[in-house]
Length: 277
Image (cartoon, rainbow, N blue to C red):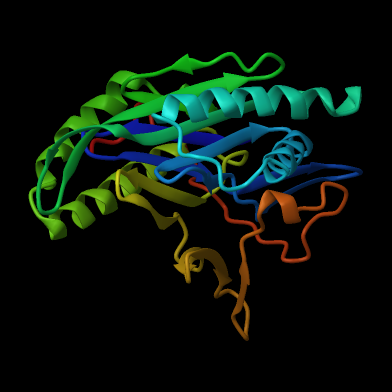
């Protein structure tokens, strides 16, 4: 099952999601080969949890929309559009595919910019979740989650964020802060429930300048990196080493497991409480 987590900072929003898919056929099969975060709108990210068929229907519906439209006054308009598109796409599915499906939209608010410095632009963030079948918008403030990510304590997540705020004093500080945040939150997600979540994560950091991608791999032998703006998986356990692109949801075949057969074993035990940052 999916774990998605979004954390709102004063100058950007960080979103992290696993790559795991569970195939429930004659034998249960786990693979880490599906991208669940997507750049959408100039400063935003869309993430999903649940039905892959519903996600495919949604992105096909989005692709059918007219291009070259004016940018909405602020990202809340985009959130309402996503909600409307999701309802239409979900209703177009056969009843058998109308199962659990959640969406998260996180964006830096380009209409509400505060202090702008050399390395930081302080702006409000839009952080909203919605779920089938009505996709009503629920606006969040500090953090939001889908799937297994909802098992984490918001107070602990916010406390970690507040400890990281002081890192953002220069350009190197931002990179350091993102690295620590990704490692900390990735570790917590990896330990949520063991097998269902996995150990490979895609990460997006959205601010008013745009979206930057980062990888997180719990394992060192099997991992993920960013090349040319795309996520590439690698497996160093085999000779020669394998590498292959992470599959986008519109490329995914819901009837057939990926031949890459990548699987990352997550931590063996769940701690009593999340580790300190």
